[in-house]
Length: 110
Image (cartoon, rainbow, N blue to C red; front, side):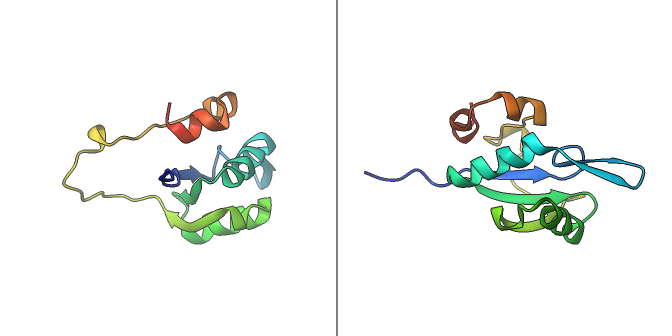
């Protein structure tokens, strides 16, 4: 039986994995736990941020989830693709939606 390819998921840092109040950073523990569960379930996770790849990686290390991610990336400013983003098979979830959905629902894209 053919196996389903890993679900590829990009995860933002600020206000998704961590909240900042001045110089204080507060982990969003339920999302950190959700990342661990998605990794365990076979998701292929990438961490990205407008703050850049080094910031995304440092944040994942700080939260103890560095090993969950395949790579760390800056968010793009320009996307060059022959297919419009609006026609991608892409599901965007707010962190609150991600927390209320089952792991299976997230992995299936529903």
